[in-house]
Length: 465
Image (cartoon, rainbow, N blue to C red; front, top):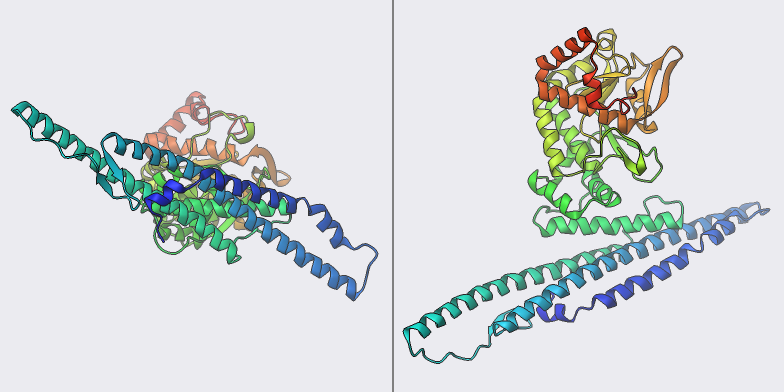
């Protein structure tokens, strides 16, 4: 049942907050049992069928405890979000009621605007008549303002209620997951993430930017990454709105092999996607864009990492820049994706919105020099003809570092892959800015004069120089 205006007047943000605090205390009590659960499961010096049965039972108990902690964490997060949102909403209600009282209106329990101003006496002059008409016009404007704000308050209230109810129903249906956690604390983070995804998803639905069943696959991964990286809901909504995103757009990634990297071990994975050899240039370009969207950021400059440039904020503006760069470098999708695959190389999409590849025959080898070379939107590592180009790419991505071909074979370097990709993406910008012929001319001029402006512009230390 929809909340009425009087219901919202009676809502108590502090009471909701107290419920969240109480739930947090109970959850933390369970998390405190981690050592006891671990010790009980070991059962030292007990062997045989009975011992194995007991261990199995204790493992089931531990798994149930992890799910329970995840459910408590999800509901706690939902309650805390609701408390924060209700506090803001109650301020809007108070301001709305105050405006109504000031102009002699009353907002009924169902949200109707009631005029309580006594009838005006007949005007005694033309001046009084004009003044009365102006007062009535102004009050009519106020009435319309009150109607709009009351409608928005009720819409927001019911959205808050729906979001909280959905998380509670998911917990009741045992559909909150621990995200394969191996500890109770990890299960708590998993449940908290589920609640944040519900919050973001509901915000998109409330704004008319998402319809249909609950999101899955790459679309859900997007919302998970946004929550984990602390991307504001306004940023997510702006991307969805300005770039007309729908769940259908994300399906191109659902059909690709995802390769994950978490080199810093913070539990926030970056996703790269291996392109099939028969993919079209158009689909490759779309997969690149969607990979940028899904990752909701990179780790360039994260955790105080030294870099040549300040990190660029994730958002709609950066996505628009990437799209414009792709259009300028469209030849690298229309021709070179096919060229790399035809000559035995393989390509992955990257979180910063370009392609990275390696391998290939002797023809392909000519196009990757030193540590690697960027052409348009494609960066080719200088790793020539590995036994399995796709497997070598997987190894590069999972490591989180640049790799090189040496006299001793293919070796992992020490340069962070995020920094290298940022460097190479700036080379992509150079291709887009100067055009194909202009970039070739710049390379030739630097080779003749001994200049190094191309690498300096891309960031020397980011490129490993």
